[in-house]
Amino acid sequence: MQPISITKAPACRIKQAFEEARRESRGVLIPYFMCGYPSAQQSIKLVLAAVQVGADIIELGMPFSDPLADGATIQHAGHIALERGMTINGCMEIARRISAESTIPLILMGYYNPVLAYGIERFCLTASTSGVSGLIIPDLPPEEATPLQRAAQHYGLSLIFLLPPTAPGERIAQIVKIAASGYGSFIYCVALSGVTGARATLPSYLSSFIQRVRAYAKDFDLPLAVGFGLSTPEHIAELTGYADAAVVGSALVQLIDQYAEEEQIEAVKRYILSLHQARLGRREYETTLQ
Image (tube, rainbow, N blue to C red; front, side):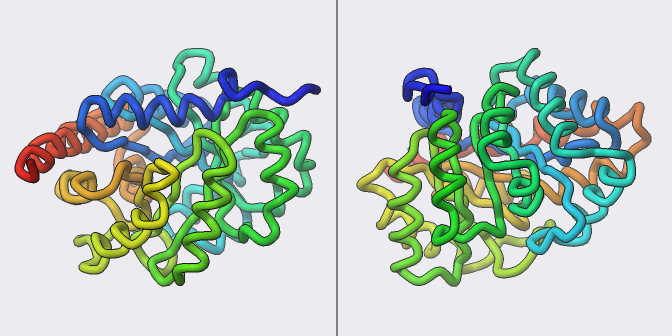
């Protein structure tokens, strides 16, 4: 198969989502849903509900038996999804069905072992033809990412790396350079050292961490997203004042867990709408800086 042209690459949808948000002076909202949680069909409905009320990009979690970066909430969701038969092919089918009803960019997030077992080329080809725009592989360091990076670019996908707050300058520069070599990419800044999970407040160092990464990324026009620990509209309003995007995962999974299946869609809509309205506050923040 010939490489996909840059203008037709699925990853371009990620770039377009950030460009649209920038034109509207707001942050990008990226909710996370676990494929197959609470069921395959319900996870599709929940994603489409989030799209209706303001989500810009969707992260789709691929469940794995040994998720090192995930806190208890995401682990629980992944365990249930696996018990109910979710597979890589099942995740691709979920992406395909979502993309059949929406043009929202989809990013698959999961661990490297299942990707290797599936086959790197086959994985990227299937993802691309299933409507996926990008990949996040938390346990894949940049030094070992070349085979996946090449395959992802060949099939028009963005490979997005996590950057922890403890990262030294040379690591930041390395990841920025890799991200800039692809298309439709962004830097995923991890708000916390450790595993995922909702927190009551944002870390005091977060703003300075983002400023430090921004100094390396600004020449490449790479957007900065922040995830791990975000949960409230107040978090989103604060964060999108200095970062380009907010990822919400554990809090959303917890919310789904709190409701009976027939109530989950409306609960997710209310929650995502509250986050959507909060990130519109970025306009007021930027106005005060002028």
